[in-house]
Length: 470
Image (tube, rainbow, N blue to C red; front, side, top):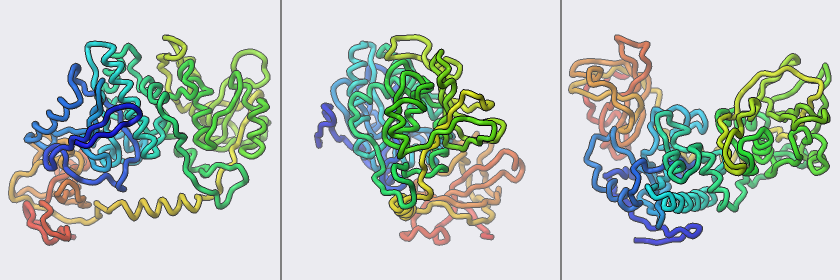
């Protein structure tokens, strides 16, 4: 077995046999776009024990099969599926991964499972090893762990990992406590090395629309930029500024941001500061600061995502004071997340407007074209009527891992559905349809046939029934 060392952790490759829990299908685009952190959910088991279980328990219904790329315990890390292949570690029906990243996690993300134990010290050693592995992967694949490494519990509502691991270590269950461990070993700033083609000197490479889209994707998350006092409003401001320019801002409190000498020097190239007036109109992407120069308190800061002359809509953290409610100063357990809220303009309010790129950079455009070229098309808007000649399972999403509906709703022999598109996934062609007797139930999927044609032409296949194409 091949052995490597990732930031001090022994790493072995013990790849699953293809056709077991390893399907062998490449990730969309050929490389991972984010990472999902898991814990095993079964305490007192080793990385190798879990890999062995995967290898020996594949002969079960495909809709029940789960898998992950990597297992980490207190002694080692075992890779059982290459990180460029798909694994089935998040339910396809879970909507949050699509909302945040515009993709299903199984199609583009690495799944890392960390073991935990009844012995707290063993759990902490496994967590430390897991943090090193996550930091290594984030650096290797140029992934920002602060924004593109959710916990399984963050994107699938019925899951509790990696909270089980964190609790076994004596920490709060929030994924931010894992991020703090990863931060110890993450040594690389994830920056897109591009040259703006149409922007002011010192401008970010992001357009206003790109940045606001990113802001909206942060809603509901928590950010502790300085790893101190948990989830403050200033942390959220710094996460955004770091996204734009690769560094945070300075000041004892949020109210200092528009006047701090270090910030003002940076603003000469990166932004313009506006004092609020009755005629001032904020813009999406502005950083708004409350309470500046009032003398008391810390002030407040947020990012604007919508504005009129009468009000602003922002995404903010710690408005209600719930960013850090208990626990040590370096390990707060605040409940408040980045939240969208509507506010009136106030007299003591300053707006800091970043110098956005006025259009996508050349490299950004070329990367998008490259990604589009690399990402194979799998869905076509072909329509028709399918009449089954046998009993066929119905699923809520296309693919062998889509959850199966109740057997009373499966297609039976001679029953028909009108489909609106077909998708190629997991070695089958899938039809997207609504039940003719209950269209309000939404769309469902059924397999039309196995893919046997070498050129994967659907009209050359033998169907599980008859198709009348429209």
